[in-house]
Image 1 (cartoon, rainbow, N blue to C red):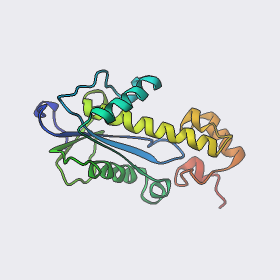
Image 2 (image 1 turned 90 degrees about the horizontal axis):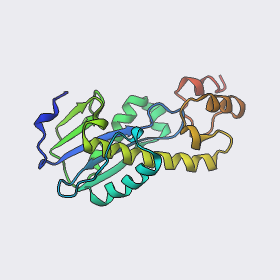
Image 3 (image 1 turned 180 degrees about the vertical axis):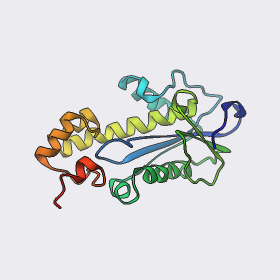
Image 4 (image 1 turned 120 degrees about the vertical axis):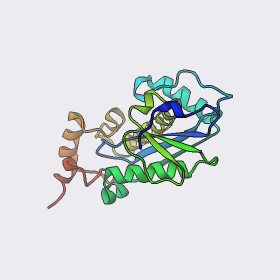
Length: 198
């Protein structure tokens, strides 16, 4: 269900949940859940896409230090190919919320749908720019996934993964055609599927 945000009071345990990596052709989809501590405010929280990489890195450490609870979770390439990206994302979000060591009273999910959770949840469209806990989750998920992309770039040179983070850019598509898919490419995504042996 979608609700206005005026029903959330600051002293409630609210988890913000967000994902990064639904659109890329390779790598896991990474999610995070964060319960902020009202007594330890974090300045400058915003949608991770609106922050510089250096600012995200700084906030990443601050969020993990100050939050009441946080969890970073994921769904692997095999799960994405098996379930489809939407269901894999919902599974990863579920894992993030279940991984919190404090049980929230409410989970606010960025987007227009909620995963199946043991706690009440509400979807918040553009939540990463409206709800500080969702913004914090978006930062944890993005920094984690970007670091994984740097590692995959070293493991699979020639694809430019550190630069495009797996998204279907011209550079990535050209490298895919030239070098073929790696084990971390999502075989259910059309540009990768087209290059597989029939």
